[in-house]
Amino acid sequence: MQFHYSSKNPLYPMASCAFHAMHTRVEMLVVGVERDRGEELAHMLRERVCDMARRFNRFDMTSPLAVVNARAAVEAVSVDDELYMALQLCEVFRKGTYGYFSAAPTLKGAPFVLCDQSHEVRLQSEDALIDLGGFAKGFALEQIVTLLRSEGVGMALVNFGNSSIASIGHHPYGEGWGVGVENPECRGMQAFEVRLCDGAMSLSGRTPSGEYHIINPHTGVKVAQDEMILVEGRSPLVAEVLSTALYAAPASERATIMQSFGGYVATEIYCRGANVKCRRIE
Image (cartoon, rainbow, N blue to C red; front, side):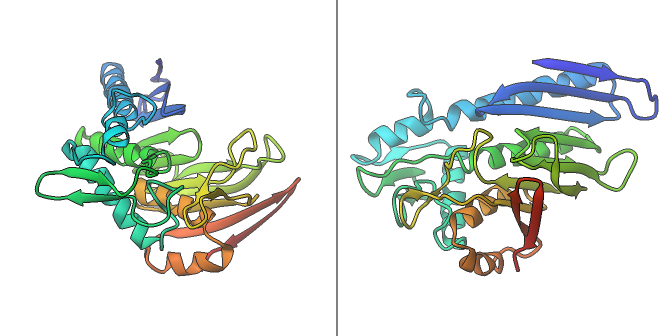
């Protein structure tokens, strides 16, 4: 883990850290803390994120999620409270987005059945495979913001790979944290800017290498659309899920999905070379 501390401005000393987890670069900037406290928070952040990364990694055969995928089509599998809550939320979001977000995007409909009394999970079919890739970063970011607030942090920015970002408080020299969205067709050129203050943003689209990777659960195939979907709002988790669902959905259905998410703003960003067009979904 990389850690840096600056006290050049005694009014606003800053601690920052960076490390890799969940297949991305995780960065944190905390304002107004002493060096020892900044290092302590950085280690807490890394430990919590890495723990969630392991637990939600379906490719790690020792993870709780991998156990569910391996056994739950044959027998009900008991899971811990955190994974059960995550799966509950996935079902809530699946219904709230008209099925365009799913924990099993290659399978149409409800991928699993939950038992609240026993905290057991049963997969609906042998073809069901739970993949929390479109959920885990937002879930982790939500947990980190809660953790930092509980530790008394009043100003901070946490960045998961420039696609999922959350802020606590405001920038020390302004009302919001300025976050730029890079034009994928003109590296170094900004396509859009967001001002975050006690809020979050999530960006969905092609991967940095240009791959289409988001699946439409209604068809089971990857969506080949070149626009980016940006969602801003209070919750990092809701923003993450919503940007994924909106990208997967046809443009004609996006406004209908947004009607269920008051307080959130979604924007379609179209980049054709240096030419950028943005349209709010409403």
